[in-house]
Image (cartoon, rainbow, N blue to C red; front, side, top):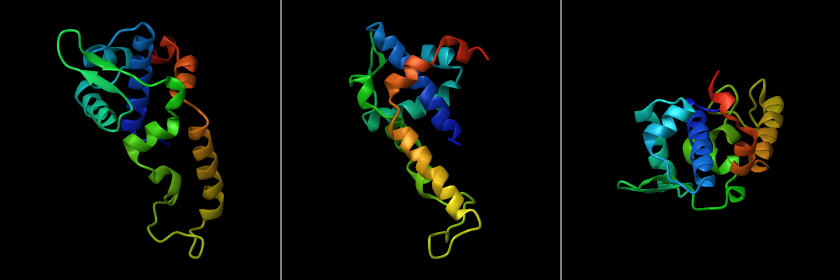
Length: 141
């Protein structure tokens, strides 16, 4: 349901958060190795997340990515919106440009329920929840 960029971003954020739990910044190579994501693509995603103030970065030998906010303050919605925008929460499930309540697509009403549930799930789960639920075994598939 989420884009590849969003999937990679979420996985990378959990790695960065875990490093932060150990009070250390983490470089892009290590993030990508642990999250099993491509380096150049992930670097662009993380640069965007820095611009959106989801994470921070520091250059230099002791630098890397880190999260300066409380993990309970960053919702999954914040992450998805920062990477993909809010299209997944508002656009037509069939990708039609003229789908709305007055001119619904065949799945409009059913997909509206799905979008609402997805929005609620993303708002009710934080980065802290993701880190608690993510274990290294997930990356070993």
